[in-house]
Image (cartoon, rainbow, N blue to C red; front, side):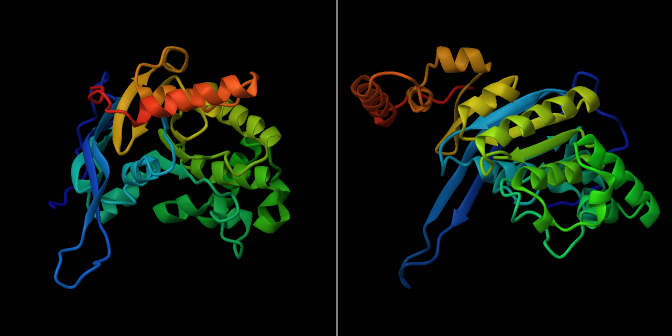
Length: 300
């Protein structure tokens, strides 16, 4: 792979913020027999989409559909087998390491587990200012000042800077993770199941916080989720991922009320609803049967 530095020319005004083109990620499985080549599995099979600035795009699908692989590849934490990821006109997987480190100022990630994603040995100040430390452009005093500012923006206090993660609840820890992602003022935040590990009452608070931050800073979200209610609450558009392929895309209301693909229909049918048990069971069984039948070609 050829390494390059970012182009000095700014992207066109109407260019998408994020553009994913024909993304393929193939994994080699452990060899099961000495005389046979190792098997391979494709987690992503030619995924393509784009999104403009200031918007939220949801990626939905069940476990194993390729959602987290897509998130890691967009974040340049995983290398695609083929295809490209362009952010602000830059091909992230062709940047030299130093250039990629600088480019990360424009895109950050919020992980699913608020307990596992924060280093328990570090103070909140060190955790939140970590992206600034990686950039190496500010002093320790400036980092602390910016960390205090961004903590206030996510609803925490300045005196929380010197505490450790174990002193906070799950919802507060996820606010710390959001503050860490926000501190470089990124253009894009990739959120991989950001509320799935939280209580239902706390989920709404975190989602409302993400909405408020988007309105304040104009940040875009690529939201990875299996929860249609979460995606409907936060996203302007939804992409349905099934077995590593995009099978449907559209606005949440259109997709959830007028789903065309059998798999999307099965996802919608699986959302808990108030209806007689037998009728719901028949609906789920019919949707599952459609999803397992030969599906039409993926949507472009």
